[in-house]
Structure formats: C-alpha cells, structure tokens
Length: 199
Ligand SMILES: NC(=O)c1ccc[n+]([C@@H]2O[C@H](COP(=O)([O-])OP(=O)(O)OC[C@H]3O[C@@H](n4cnc5c(N)ncnc54)[C@H](OP(=O)(O)O)[C@@H]3O)[C@@H](O)[C@H]2O)c1
Image (tube, rainbow, N blue to C red; front, side):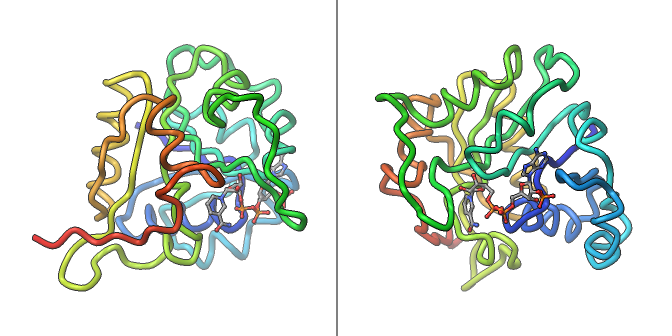
C-alpha cells in the first residue's frame, strides 16, 4: 500500500511525522514542489520522500491537508480516483480570519468528497491541533484516540489499521454525515478533545 500526502503544512507534516515514527513509507507534496521539501524530509527521516502533487496523488491512499479554499486547486487534474482511499484531514475554516465556511447545510467531508469523485473518502486526523497529533501517541499510560468516519466500510477498515499501526486508538464514528459532523471544526463537539484510552 503506497501513501501520498498533499499538503506539507502543520497537519500534513504532523501526519508524516506519525508515519515516520512507525517507519512507514510515504511521499509528501505541496504547491511549491519537492525542492522546497528537502529540509523537511531530511528531518523526518528515510521513510518519507518529497514528491510532486501528482506523485503523491497517485498513491493507493492519499492524505489531504490543505487550506480549505485551496482544496480545488490542490485536487485538480490528478489521476482518476477509481476507488482509491482519500483521507480528509481538513476543516472548513481558514487562517487568518478563521471565518467558518458556508457549507450550505452539508458536512465538510461531503463537500470535500465532491472534489475527489470516485474516491472512498475517510475523514480522520482532523480533530487535534497539529502539535498534539505530531507527538508520541503513547501518553498517560494509554494511547491517544483518533476518530474516523466514512461511507465505505472496507476503506474505513484500512484507515483504522493504519491508525493502530502508528500507535493510536481509532474510534469509528459512523458515516461522513454523522461522524464527519461530530469531528468537524467548527460545528462538532469532538475537535480538540485530546483523549487517551487507558488499557
Ligand atoms: N493546523 C492545525 O492544527 C489543524 C488541525 C486540524 C485540521 N487542520 C486542517 O488541515 C488543513 C491544513 O491545515 P494546516 O494548518 O496544515 O495548513 P498550512 O500549515 O497552511 O499548510 C497548508 C498546506 O497546503 C499546501 N497547499 C496549498 N495549495 C496547494 C496546492 N494547490 N497543491 C498542493 N498543496 C497545496 C501548502 O503548500 P505550499 O506552502 O507549498 O503552498 C501547505 O503545505 C486545513 O483544512 C485545516 O483546517 C489544521
């Protein structure tokens, strides 16, 4: 299973760091190209490579963490999704104004899914601040919790296995409409709940 990352900012880097800690290979990308990522991948270690957006976007599993208004450009003209898994790590709000996006009564992951037609979207890795996500998930005698939601059970099972492999405890919140909303910032009750499962 290959993993690509689109977005090398706070969350894309935090996700890459969790993979690197577990020695899992991935290709990370941004809008400026692989040369701009040389220092980052050197720091992350040998399992994480810098690539183009197109290289990251053709992986079996593509993790996306891009500023909300830049998602259409970041996801344009990539190879057909064809049932591949896309992890939506985004929230519908953007610095510096932090003005919530008008989603017209939809859940942000459903709006996101329209940008990756044919992909199996799983919402995950979006409920914690980047600096918390990046830290060792073994904490306080337990393991830090990550939530995931999606409409395809097999895709969720693959993301759940990845979450376990990198040392977190995964909790299935259900469909995008239900679980996506619970974990979405703003709007849901779960963002920034830094939970640790003991035992
Ligand atoms: N920061 C948090 O603590 C946090 C927590 C949970 C969820 N989130 C969500 O995660 C997403 C990313 O947030 P962030 O804080 O990581 O943002 P960020 O630090 O500003 O990073 C955004 C990344 O998106 C890339 N990007 C922009 N346009 C692109 C394009 N056309 N093609 C490829 N890459 C492109 C940028 O690359 P360039 O710099 O090369 O343009 C940059 O690497 C947002 O939806 C945010 O709501 C953030």
